[in-house]
Amino acid sequence: MKICIVSDSHDRADPLLAAAQAAARAGASALVHCGDVIGANTLRPLDALGALGMAVHVVHGNNLGDALALARMAEASGGWLHYHGGEAELTLGGRRVYVTHYPHQAQGMACTADYDLVCCGHTHVAALVQQPNIRGQRTWLVNPGTVAGIGGPPTWVLGDLERMSFETCTLPS
Image (cartoon, rainbow, N blue to C red):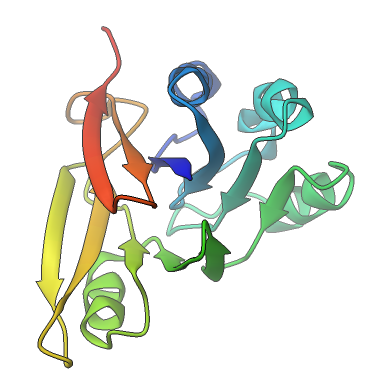
């Protein structure tokens, strides 16, 4: 299973949609948003992808926006949009995935070895790290940067959960 990992869209729907469309063309069947969506309307253009079967999972960040509007939009989405609040524990492609906005929380969760993949945002800097965990193994810790391109290039991550491989992608300027 391939997934699109994004974060920090900050009310910018166009780059979010561009990343989702690129990921869909690459075979992604789910999108994970690691927070700072801000307005629910930022997600509205993704409705077309939901109709194609791409599930969208969203947590909020420190720029919360309207959580009630996000929850209502998810409820009315027909099942394509899932708003999880401050954090999410997901099973995607048979893998255990933890999602938060905050890198320090993500690093701590990656160290527990309870997850195959931990995703976060907040820093606006993309990073793919194999975090050592308490079992003496490594857990993928993925920060896709900022899809909106605020303070850096507009980036997102394409993940392949079968191979457990991740690639940082940059949207054209």
